[in-house]
Amino acid sequence: MKCEKCGYSDNGTGDWAHVCGPVKVKESGSNERIRECWIKAAREDAGETWDSQEQFIERFAVMIIKKCRDIVSATRDMAIEEEWNVDEAMSTAMYDIEEYFGIEE
Image (tube, rainbow, N blue to C red; front, side, top):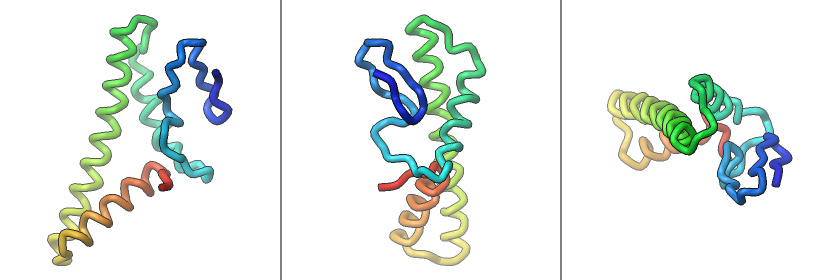
């Protein structure tokens, strides 16, 4: 099966987890942030072995998690400075992460 959006092919394995994943990505090109993380992780040879593929996936996930952490940290600082309640801070952080990565609900 081949993804019409990104060209990913499962090569008949049935493994359909990839950058287009189970979330809907905005058509506006905002998903470029995800693609940037993917490319950066792939620069270190992804290789053909399962171990090297696991290392690639881990690098990709770590990059996304670090960016989410940075966004939450910036929101926390703003919330403290502007004396937001917890709901305002968390809602803003969730929105900012979705906006950064171009994710729609």
